[in-house]
Length: 290
Image (tube, rainbow, N blue to C red):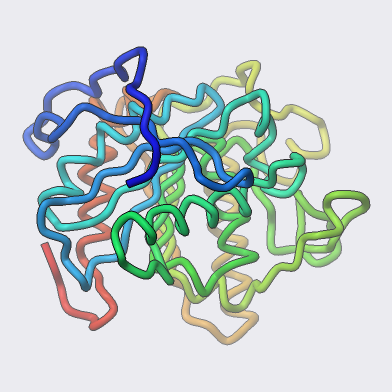
């Protein structure tokens, strides 16, 4: 198994819910073997379902990876899924949500983690499902644009801003490779549009807080709040799919009584049940699996 360190501060308990039982085990932070990797939480279920893709859950800029791990671990155990929750520390991965900008690129770090998990479990991970909250949702949809073959289902919650399917706008706001680090962006839009995508946002996530990008031209193109930006990006992706001759597979849903808080989205908005229900309703054979 990879090297381990015990979590020094226990993650916030996401709160008891009928659909989210108590965590199955205390989260343990694993140290990466590769210098490209980052620390991560890992849950390997007692009985792995070989037809169930692993779930990767990525935190927001508060970097509370243990909280995200604890929220999804019971479902992962119950359904036989491997669960991975990376920790993109601010010192080395300050702008992980843009994926390519840091010296330790977030995409390379994630694939280094997967090699670790493959070595630990003896299972090849060619594809995975992905959930991201806030900054994690930003990272997730940019990852899907560059590496669509690796992602089975993509759930995005409460992103602050998006990469729109606009070839006339430079990355990270659009699809055209930009200058410097953004020149490494190589999107595969049509393949990304074939991925089932779920876009979530709290219905009360309308505050223009300090973490929200508030440049005037971003407001004009994407909207002034996270709710508006999520809705506009969903519509833009649906329109892009139709232009490519692809049936859109992107759903949009607001979470009740929830603002920009993972805990509120879980406790009040039912986020875990929404995400896991949506993911469990599909598998590669097209049959329902709960």
